[in-house]
Length: 199
Length: 116
Length: 153
Image (cartoon, rainbow over all chains, first blue to last red; front, side):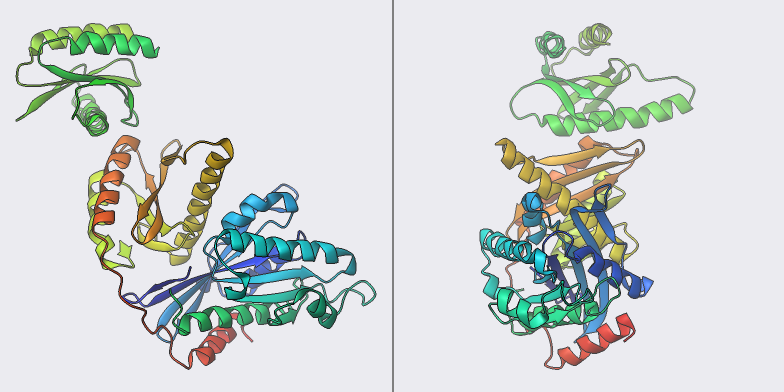
């Protein structure tokens, strides 16, 4: 849950990048880390295995500066994608203010996207949150791959995006769509705050 | 080992005026074994005693007296006695105003020798 | 020392004075910082909070898996520094304390005064006010310009 402090005029929000293993969640954070000026970001913390798969989470705090007179900070987290790490996914999801679902656009990974999406829904529900109440955007990553290997954004929208939330095409390794996705989810999270949702 | 600690503590608490005794880890001030009358805040006494002993150890050594071998703190409502039992363990006795300090000191030094 | 809520300041200050801890961080169970002492950069605090909350969460989960009650406190003892982590309930939800202490104090003292701080915190919580207006209507344009400035686009 976002922490809003009226005395210090500070807002801190937690955004979780969710999705199947190797869909590009960590790459999102790495790209953001590389582009944000040093004085506006913290260290990127990665709890990864020897083979660089996320074991617990990646974490990147960024300072958005002043918005409506509030110093606004975002804490970006990724979850481990592999199915067997569900306990840690649940822990990271605790208290999330917004979720970016990073789907792998490759057609052969479609089932894993679907499974991960269902898992997100279940884990939110276990925490008492209906996915419909959670600020959520989709990111269809790896759209730079050859067209015969991937599903198009509209195909992915039809297959995964039942709620018709905002979706973004991306190529996280080179950065296309990363900024737009973060902007999209930031807007939703802050809109929810602005609407007077309990903070 | 715990049985040996408890045996030593029971020996001390049988003395007149001793309201409780503890074996405490010297480094972190945590209780290892205790035999206390109800109402004595063991955790607080253990932390206090270990902290005092460590500070006193530094000061006493700096003054050229080597390590302290016995500490007696007299307060308005009781006494705290501390003896190191080896490098890592402290033996502590908490006394009321009826405590026989001389006897308690001898018993504690003997018990500390056994434990160390 | 810095506390987001003024009522947290006094108990935290007392704890710092009594325990002689080097760094202290109070956070929500999701890793959101509530108060801190000793950290120099806001973003480093966030990393420490995220990691501290993760350690506590994973240990609580471990307790659940093992079928035992959640652990009251966790400590990591280093050569010159120790870390003490403990979760506690407040009327504002579950909070976590992370304390780094050196050789000038001890785990026993830290734990003792931490428990006292928790008592003071849980007793001193003021009633929460109603929902306040957080963001002005034009926050979206400000957000856009902030993000643009941040990403250089």
